[in-house]
Length: 342
Image 1: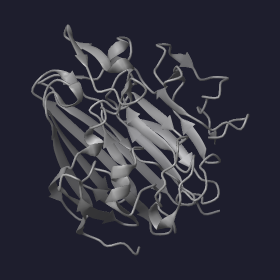
Image 2 (image 1 turned 90 degrees about the vertical axis):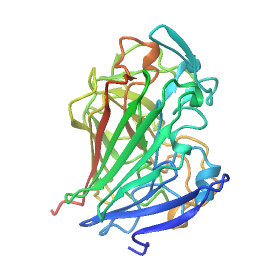
Image 3 (image 1 turned 90 degrees about the horizontal axis):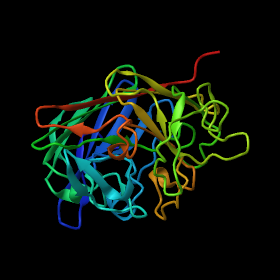
Image 4 (image 1 turned 180 degrees about the vertical axis):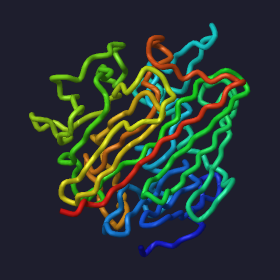
């Protein structure tokens, strides 16, 4: 595939911390994982000439741009209104890095940490990080591991585990941008999408849930049957949570996507109660991405399995509380299929 296999240096952070890139593969699917942010830097199918994800060829671009390309985000993925929440009667104020709200754990979240390599094989790598108590305003030291594994059936499996020494919030997500057609050279608005959700959480102008849980039927949020990401009016801008189930636990299919031009399909399976659809409607980075591609708005879409946003402030939402006697375990998979014959 023209990219180095194994483990190789990928630069250093401003603090002098070395960052590495680890290659894993199985069958016709290969991935390159960074220790910075535990990010999926590249993902490729042998029969497809373009990367399946958006990423950058050098560390500097990850340091300069804050769109969470391929990273593991948390300790609370998505948004918390005003960064304020209460746990067991104690009030907390998290770092506010997004219009006065907390996004993906604050400006120094898991995506900005250098993770340690714990285990590594041809088809998997396990990374770990400790998020010290008080970081970004969160209680308890959170110990996190993330294992990426490529299965023989062309799936990228993401398993995230975490423990804490004090009751805290724990909601972690993979933030890959996918483009199943051309590596981000064109937009994803004509990809066909299906989401197994009959409801969504509407948001205000700052993308904070209003508290309502509304049916998708007869709205632009209705992806219960496959259709293009671009809706009938031509609008393809989404940054919304889709409600899969009422609680974490059961592993099931959450979404399906297809590029009609390439024929490649992707299924998303997860244990999480929600999935955030983000279609990349944001100011694009100035740096060139993989294969020299200049990304634009809508060059990639994210399907982020997670607990519903701002759940600490909506007690009837699925909750993201982790206690010292518990273990957080998320299992998500991105399963890829080549064009079907005939």
